[in-house]
Length: 362
Image 1 (spheres, rainbow, N blue to C red):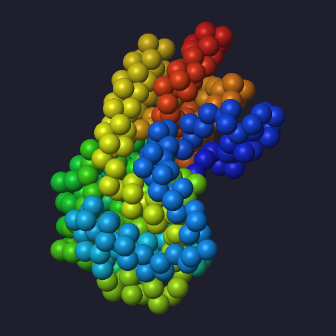
Image 2 (cartoon, one colour):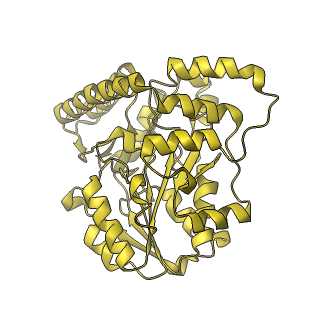
């Protein structure tokens, strides 16, 4: 997941503008687990502080073994990186697709990195397809398949980073099979899969070399301060990426945090409990307030209002950052993106929205 923040707005800039400390800013513009790092992860990090003079494992042997067990994948088909954007860039450069198919609306970073000159793919070779509002922004599966081309690459995030819509495993594998038949790579960013019931398809890479799974542990496990991303893909592509030396391995603390987080089942249960309760709360309150929103299977929502700019500014004044989608392909003016946080923060957001509606007689 490349998607970060609200354009150039983030908690640090907001804190500077509002003249408060960063901890007083409620950031609803990024899909991050509000539970933060688990107690087990924090304990492990404290133990490893005394080893900061050691070099991290450049081959990430131990963490790749953990990931392989967690995903039921081949550890030799896993590569780890410190930066999500750089890892995606390296993958696209290794594939050098003749055509990129991007489903919109989705992570805007997919378009920016796809058209970057270093990837070998220019804007003229990018085909964007759009999910329709009338169909609830469901994935445009048939159009995606129709545009698959030999030597090309289709890019999707599942669940969709912006709309929160999620494809189940069966649907993703159907897309992957179509990609194999057309000899077109399909990259699925699964960074937010933990927030929905879609399930990973990383275990299918061994049987279908045209599947590329990209993911980050940072959003789901509350580790955004540590950089840890990984990809599961065929070994030929891994060889090209490794040879190009484009990917920096995660640091020592990131590797240890990832290994412990993957084994923490209590954290997963707590996250499911939080997410279920907050989704019920936010949907109920938005309906009561008469706010139009897009159904979501993930931890974020799109809401719509003709006064989106005014609402954005109003919420900013009460120290809440949401994401404007004015320039996002497939959406346009009127949409605001909201990622769920802890209950207190969500309640403050709803209060702010209701106050705005009341003042403007909507």
